[in-house]
Length: 335
Ligand code: AMP
Ligand code: MG
Image (cartoon, rainbow, N blue to C red; front, side, top):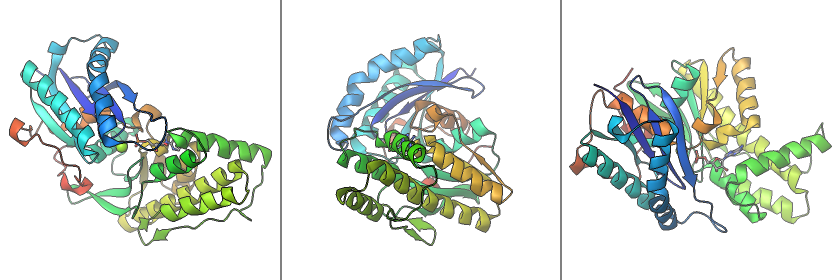
């Protein structure tokens, strides 16, 4: 008999427990994100945070949905990619719960989980995925039984770039939402903006992207006295346009007509609007899941675990983590 599948997400700064029911229907996660007072995330500090809040969050997710842990019939965790110390905490919590309850364990690919929750939520069949998160920026499509990375960032993830730029202005993590607010404020005070004086490098290299030059140049504009809200607007326009351009090329090359957004930066309204415009121009469609399923969340891990448990389980002696797990290393064995 199938009951609930638990999903545990710990690839970076967020610890999150989510659930899907016996039909694979997702339920909102209980999450807690480490927000450092200053500087970026230190992997070991994030891992310590995850250990500290794990027991409370696990109890919370069960309580939120009124279930008892004996109703769990599978435990899924993010096996990679991500920060080693953080991944290890998730894997050991998963091993502990699965062993205690004597239910199957399954280690899943975090990037693939973003795709599957998006497909499930948006009803997409065969999309090109634009995966824009803190640590990752990839354009992905399903070809010959795997999700293939057609293009990606050659340096930092787009979310990291936004967070670093924000931090230089004294804005705490996560910086992306605040940059979005400042960019909107600029459009209110300057409804017909031009790029004059706000040009930044635009780093699309074939199907790949780069963001560190953009970060440096945006910071230089601020240091030279350009108003911060104007720089935020230009930064969003340049960074998002480069992602959407690569996604468009991927749609053209693969002949696919659906675009699916995933990752925390997919919460951004301007990113969603640009993607819609591009897809409409091509007579295609653009989709984005609810924001709680764009950011890292345990529910997407539970969903992919539920799908994968129909074909395989992870034995304890293979339940180590893989910091460098690639999107295309996971065979797609589910419908
Ligand atoms: P993830 O790594 O998928 O959990 O997403 C976290 C990243 O998403 C961080 O870099 C955030 O700054 C970014 N983010 C969250 N909300 C927004 C937003 N509204 N606009 C831009 N970036 C965002
Ligand atoms: Mg992610």
